[in-house]
Image 1 (cartoon, rainbow, N blue to C red):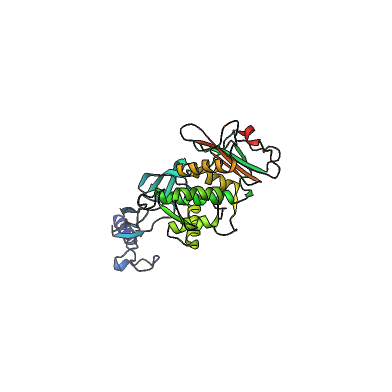
Image 2 (cartoon, rainbow, N blue to C red; image 1 turned 45 degrees about the vertical axis):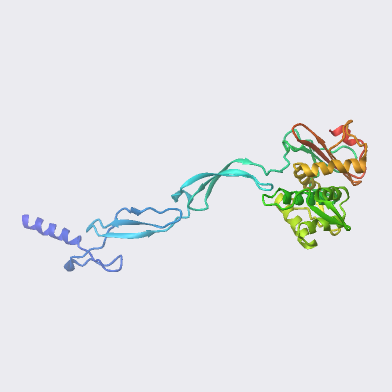
Length: 336
């Protein structure tokens, strides 16, 4: 009986000796003393990250032979070993500012917080009026302090582009004056119709009349020809985010929306030279014009498009743009 037990035990041990051939299911080779590996759990050797592959190791449960494998970068974000940090992105004239929680090793962005609107975005709230007075097709009213719209009707409405064009050129010129390496000043000489004027005087003349010959003189002062100056103005519009406005100072192809014109006006009212030029234009063109008994800092009237700005506290302005075929002549009095 004991001999039978010993023989049974030897038979059982022989079953543990299996083939180590290339095929996973190779038959047992008792006489060779080989076996099929039976691997256990995987263990990290080099952890996979969001930018680098890793490796792991497994051991045979029978003979403890080790096998290493490459671990590919996984598709699932949760499996990636990101290294996050917060970065504050400041707003620009046409893009939002925000705090980004982003991986420092790859472009993965987990969240954006503390979003700040673009610097010249005109914003609505629950108090924004969206019904136009009689005779008005579109209107926008805001201020240079909060940029909150108290009236918003028809921002996408196409309007005469004359005001947008004058504002776009004026902003382009003040950009050149404000550069840290600027060689131009408000007193720089500009030749116009055979006479010499200061750049400041020519800006006044441009905002007053918007004449193409004035634009040519201003272009020459910047070292541009007509094409170069037009491209410069177009680039400035793009940075401001006024996508629906085309401003060519030398042709009749300019186009604008009411919303783009309002954004340009909000930007222009931050430039003291342009505000002074607006005031000069009010005196030259409109003399005794008053809104609620007060002289406006800006008043523009192109028939179907009217714009005005009233000085507020601490150098701020409240501004209004109206568009319509049959607007009351004193409508500004009731809206301000």
